Image (tube, rainbow, N blue to C red; front, side, top):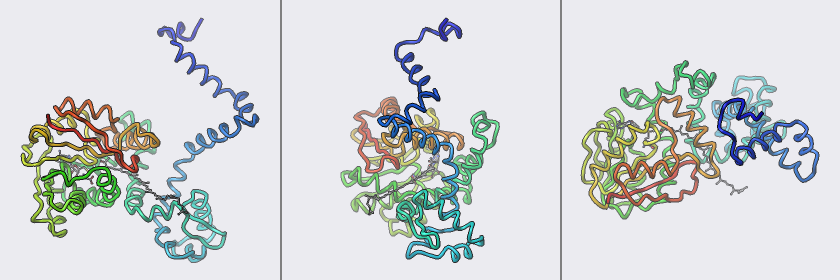
Length: 373
Ligand SMILES: CC(C)=CCC/C(C)=C/CC/C(C)=C/C=C/C(C)=C/C=C/C=C(C)/C=C/C=C(C)/C=C/C=C(C)/C=C/CC(C)(C)O
Ligand SMILES: C[S@@+](CC[C@H](N)C(=O)[O-])C[C@H]1O[C@@H](n2cnc3c(N)ncnc32)[C@H](O)[C@@H]1O
């Protein structure tokens, strides 16, 4: 009797049978021993075992990085190597403990060490070039807490601290300041990707929905000096944007509006609307409401752009469905979407001509545009 017959399921097709055969083989200790011993399969066996080990141990690596960021080690080591004893004294720990951390960091290519001093490793050096990454590592303390019991989180039995960090509906000034500061810290890497992928100089007036503190439109305004910029966000964030844009000398070229982008009337004079790291925060019905509202405000020929990390991104699959999938689940709304899902949503909202624009680091953001017929 087959497994399918036992559980009463439909008989397996050839693809499923092949899949089941592969999985039986991979689970067999005899096959694993053979593959590790046979010279042609040995590199694959080692790579797959290492990949599985990294999944088991990934949280330790992330916490090693977290300790380095908390202790500001990458900045401390920016100019020159520093003796382990000195670093230990500054961090308030025993030299043996600091050496343990430095050796862990060196194994992860964050640091380098000769056993008596430490200096930056290649990944620690790259991290310094993107200050938003350290801000995210600090922020991850919340997600780490929420994921302590992932099954309880998925069952809805644990209250997530991340949800309280993003209180869009009731954003007080203090909360808005906290999440907008995090977004502003990470915005340069995102704006860099979008500006390299899309030329905004072809437009006249841009409306950035959920535009945060204005960091993105500030960068666009610099790259497209003739473009007028508008920003729409919840009241507490819009107030921050107003201050920031004025401080950047953009008061005359910019307009800031406050409200609910899902249902409030939007300005009608934009020829491009941007949604940067916005749509993936919202469940499908809300995301459709945003797209339909954007469509209603735009004239024929105008453009809508979604820029955010997308699921299924080649070479960065774990970023989409694993990282952002669980991040947004803990946050309590939204999901990372595949480009094909966004195309369907654009079309359902009345846009045509969807286009995916290649970005240099799709792990950080993908860019998709569509136009009003
Ligand atoms: C010179 C020598 C020796 C060799 C040359 C070899 C060579 C070419 C090396 C390359 C060097 C190089 C250019 C490195 C570049 C590294 C970069 C650009 C690294 C960037 C890393 C970015 C990271 C890790 C980003 C992480 C982002 C995170 C975790 C973002 C999280 C965002 C969240 C949670 C957003 C939340 C918003 C919400 C609520 C979802 O809407
Ligand atoms: C993840 S942040 C992205 C901010 C900015 N676009 C960026 O990439 O840095 C999402 C933004 O959408 C805003 N937002 C969320 N729900 C909103 C709503 N219903 N109406 C207007 N803005 C909203 C939030 O206040 C926040 O500033």
